[in-house]
Image (cartoon, rainbow, N blue to C red; front, side, top):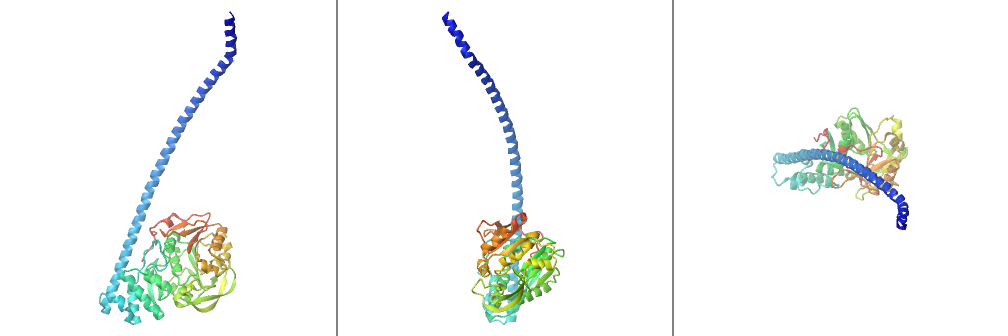
Length: 433
């Protein structure tokens, strides 16, 4: 009997635990069912997301293939144009040989014995223009040692006039169905005449960026390469404002504007800076005419020819004086005064937010109280993002902090560059001429 009593009391002691265990087991089974249900729903959702991702990747892959095909076709077309240019140039050499009764191997070596009018006549037949596409690893004089016969002929012609310091000009084709009167023997013609290009990555960039109706500021217009190109690109509904302080280069700028019958360019013989007043321009010798500066020459090869008094104007003052209501692109190549120009343009840059294409040559900037770091810092403070031209592609690429290039791009932080500027093929509107 005592055993049954013990069992009875043991059962009473165990019963609450058994009840709790039963309840916990039921709850656990419910939790498991909920977990399995949630897992099933997650698998279905993941499958849908995977299908969507796969569809997007397939679409991106197809788009990438289409873009690659377009780029490939553009490059092939550009190479065809380049090959045709070379064939035309060689034909010009042979035509000149026939006219002058020269043997096949003679032209390069006999140039030195010719009279200047004869050499000038040959120069006109050898004009060449490179296709308007990026030029990877481009640098000044990249084509100086090109062994091609046409390049060698143009090089020898340039040297002929350079050594004799003769002011001989030749009209050559330029981009966007324009022409330039070049003066053989100086730095500009050394690049444009011999190689058929000048800062090719910058021009390939502008080719994609400039659109009809835009306003373009060319600070440091020189003889007009950028001014003419931009004038054609922005068209009659747009406008170009060219600023060149040197009397010699300003006269050549006006001559090239007349040569092309351009009517949408406003040209000013002033220097853009950080103050309104008068300054002194150091004018370089004829060979290095592109190095005129408000400071000191960045390269030792340039020699001072003279000093000229020049008006100084802030960009903000120019915009106010001429009631300018739009500015889309600012190009500045002002031999070290870039930092000063930005300091005088805060209101304009804040108001219009133009894309800026600029030179950042540290040595030149330091001669005028700036430097690459100070210039880029000033642009960053105005909420601009910086780009460099990638050496391997010639295309714009975001600059990493502390990275400076001789040629750079500043883009308002709230804007994006058009996707076309990152492609290799020329724009559809490009006329290589």
